[in-house]
Amino acid sequence: MKSLRNLFLVAGFAAITLLSTFAAAEPSSSGAFTLPQEARWGSVVLPAGRYIYAVEYRGAGTVVTIKTGAGRPVAMILPQTYSQVPYSGPDQVTMRTQGSETYITSLRVASLGMLLEYATPEPAKTVVASTSAALATGGSK
Image: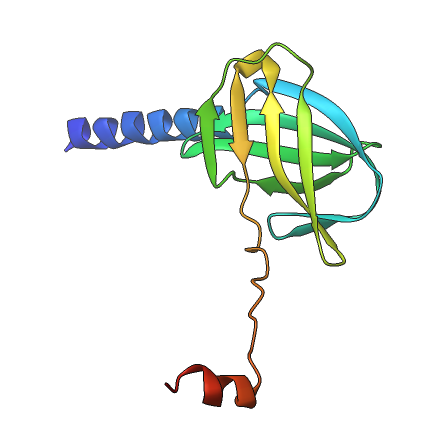
């Protein structure tokens, strides 16, 4: 009975140690960027301004933590996909404008050789409708 209690204590201590390691993950890479206009990054809307980011490895994958230029936490964002892409330039935040909305589509992290890509709405498709007169004459022979 006493050995079972000791086993639970050791297992509990190991779990707490493991969880605290993930919770206090050190950034693998960090940097800053300035948004010239409001932009959506995943489900988060970021107003125009300066931001600080940190890319971290957590239990389930890669997480990007976003803070304001003053250091106030804003969001933690998971990429839709990521890939190892050798790159020697500066880190890059890529944006796409669709209609009146701007979306952040990717973050390239040079020090990790990593490209993190984010979900954005599909571009609107243009559907061309014919007039009824053209439909009526177009199909008859």
